[in-house]
Length: 395
Image (cartoon, rainbow, N blue to C red; front, side, top):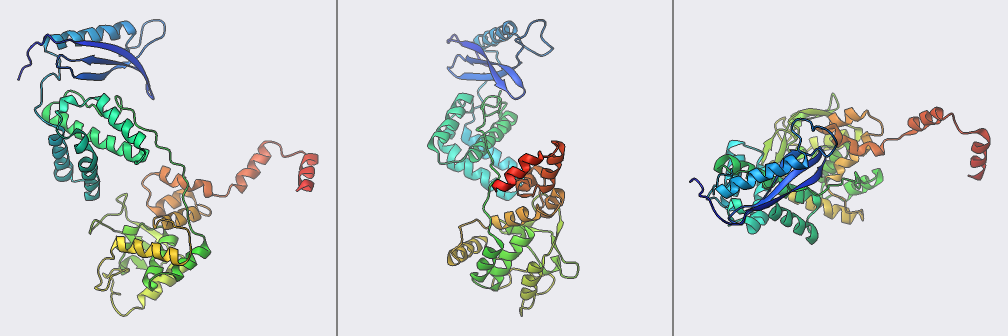
């Protein structure tokens, strides 16, 4: 339906915001129906002389704003048409799209659905799409931060889901802008410290000794000395264990009650240490479920272990051994932090199945730097003999 001119009050202003890509001009204006809109004009030019192509000066930014306001008063501004859809409609369409058309991982769909049903629908559900502005999304973000219940990483995930919902709404209902765009709603800063807690070799032995049964002991040791993820351990079959070559082949991952490719979509092989060979060799000696197609770690009927039950037994074993309460996933970090001390970081990336090298870099602060220290010593000409001797005598 073509919008009709509306005599309501239409106002607006320009502003400059700092972004990683440089200063940007933004316009913010109120439509005749009272809805406020904020959008990016383009790069700001505040220096002397003629601006580069595509840049705005304050004068040209004001002229662009006046043109927008004039179209709004005439009712011809793009986006003044109403979609007739609510956020609840858009959320349902987005979930349908990612599940049935994009066919993304079911675990990711489940995560998106949890964010939409648990948080976004109570906040925005019945509101018309046009009534949801960057300001309202920013207010939602700021409230979550103030409440302190969710981490910055989780809040960013909420904003990512919102962005996806509105991106799809633009395609389906012709929505003029995406109010959850990163240009309009600044994301909280996510700081990853790289710190994690792992068990020592002696503590791993205590953990295995406190395990509910030999199979649990074997899975703890295999996780710690191969770096396999929990789902990869649950999907491991005897054909994947090559005792002759001393390798574990990681071909599948078991999550959400189904097998799929490992994370990163690549098959990989990991060397087995003597601890792993011994633990898996003992399991291979059981009476049942030792064929090539059988799972290595099984329940009483030869099927997959329950991941939640496995973690519960893991925590009970930690408590029984009087060990720190680490996560099951920290067994994987044990492998990463140990492997980085003796292997090339790119080899560690390959063995752990990291898609991006930046993920492997979290372990680099565990790598000894003795050679680097010696090289720096040479680069700076070495310590003077009297100072070095004095320091040694003080020690």
